[in-house]
Amino acid sequence: MTKLVGVLTAGGDTPGLNAALRGLGKAAIERYGMQIVGFYEGFRGLMQNRTIRLDGSNLSGILTRGGTILGTSRDKPNNMPMGGQFLDMTDTMVENYKRHHLDVLICIGGGGTHKSAAKLMKKGLNIITIPKTIDNDLSGTDHSIGFDTALGIATDAVDRLHSTAHSHHRIIVVELMGHNTGWLALGAGIAGGADVILIPEIPYETKSIAEAILSRSRGGKRFSIVAVSEGAMSRKDAAKMRRVEEELAATGKSPEKEKAEARLLKLRQQHTANTINLAAELAQMTDLESRVTILGYVQRGGTPSAYDRLLATRLGTAAADLINQGKFGVMVAARGEGIEPVDLEKIVGKRNTVPVDHPWVLSAREVGTNLGD
Ligand code: F6P
Image 1 (cartoon, rainbow, N blue to C red):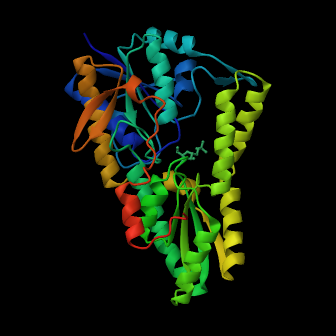
Image 2 (image 1 turned 90 degrees about the vertical axis):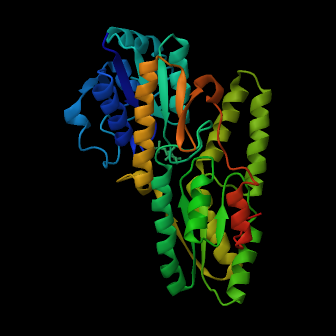
Image 3 (image 1 turned 60 degrees about the horizontal axis):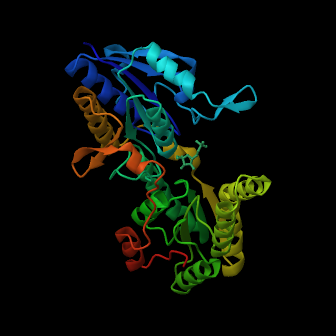
């Protein structure tokens, strides 16, 4: 019997999503004779039953296109914004899955998408996920679609900032994405030759950064590039965060818990304010001019790199193979040159952060990069 496959892309977009849809779709249709229905805008489209039949015509010519032809959203099945309130719409999604007589739902996404997909799996749906995120923070897979492209864009930005910082004898603080992990800033900082790299996993001391910049100045280099991950924090703020997290763990469901959650969210969201304050403090402490560049969404835009196209095609086609084998409840993980199905339950809710003794961290230190500690 012809297998019916549903697919959606959810969470923040990344370059390479279309390449994954194409890999999955072409293999499923051409190799296995399956049929594919795409749901628009992630789980919202599944709830609203907004679909498009994917076939040879719309899967062609998208390998190199950024974004996702299906659109995406961060809406979650159990917490769906509906007319000013948040509702649990999981059952409606289960009904729509059944209405289409789907054999499986493929969810392409990051950490949030994996949590949502696992909830649908618990409701009895056959699920396969494909990992994508520019943050590289998904556990269980060596690589995720989008990271390589974002790394290239961020590295190019750090490269380009050198000549202007050098010409004006300035400190340029460049904020890179990464959510609460430092892979992107660390990778681009090393590849782009940043003088200081600040990541969430290593809370910083502004004085240590200023000293590193002053020592460069004394050596005749009157400019510095500081690559800062959006989630990086000073030691003081990190300690504050830990205290609120502990408070949160100790409180049951109560108004105190809500207050602690709000405080935590505020601390997590003050990225740009932290970056701007840091640049101002460094200018004051070093007597050099400073400027800020927030790279932002440009890191997620445009054409995927060759590596991401290849990865997305490998993961997409592997997902089609797993459907054919009837293997569900897994993420298609990249493992070395190969692919491995990993049980969703084993990886949901886990985050791949930068170990403080990771080889990238050690190499950065060995070339004399200041990591703020
Ligand atoms: O997870 C990808 C990411 O780009 C993060 O690096 C960033 O913190 C976040 O998404 C931005 O989210 P949004 O697209 O919802 O503004």
